[in-house]
Length: 407
Image: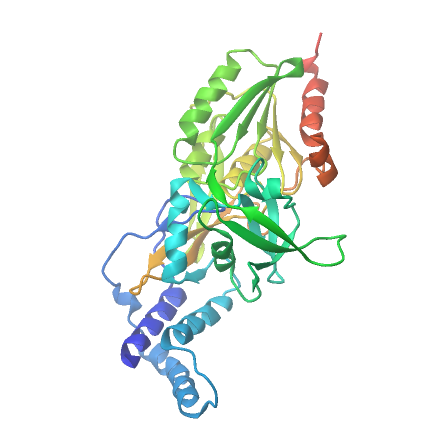
């Protein structure tokens, strides 16, 4: 048993040290690629110096077993603890180990829907889970959860010491069940509990309408597999009405497939890059526009906020770099990495960040986000009153353009 665990731990350690082969796929705030099953790579075999250095781990392991005066956790708990400790040294919240139980929960991410409360979250640098944006009309928003809330505990279980995925796994659950969130909110003296009834969260793809002054509006909710075709169809229907300007709403869009981002960005950019991808060793891959866009000239505004993440940041960043659109709203999320999931032999999953995304001009997205050209905040008071100052500012901006003079 000990020898097999020794091989497993060294293999995982070596895989992280040596790195992995990049597989083209998608960048997302909520999803992850999965590596296809394959035979163990010869590179996963520990080198003599690595094996000698790792002997220190086994010295400590055996000394604890022989001398510690107190309950000793089971072998799996200690093994996972050792791996998690190693991952923390990488300084990357998205490179994580998911136990078999958690891996099963997140397997549904690829389906485009899930059961939970409907909110975009992130782990702050201080280890606290923050609500970035509750999805409009979903259980979290209806229950009173607000952007900026800190979730301290779930059903009385503290989130202290958990990684992002472990915290999310506690919040998710079957529809119809109720979860209690212990919330810390700025301006409120003491933490308090909010009860949220979970539901099946089905994220719509696209929404369109015509606004005052002949301005078209299109909102994209995620960069899913069907998104490019549905977006193009909806965009063409709007253009048939000969709008004077267009507003692309990417607020609260958590991302999705990289291919979808390239296709949708290409609707507005005739040529040039949509993004740059930099993988291990500095290897760079350029992703150009496809050259068959249908909205290459119409005046364009993109709405963004703290929930604009990953693939949506790729599109917004490309449009901003090319001078194709003006960004209005708030600083974006800052998710510019892609992870690949490797299944371990016991059913656990190791998710490793394998590449970073950059805008065409080389601006980093990860932890930086995008700064709007025109900053307009959306307060909780605005939301409660049904006001949308960001949309209003976008309409005002497009009306101010000489080519959009309203008679």
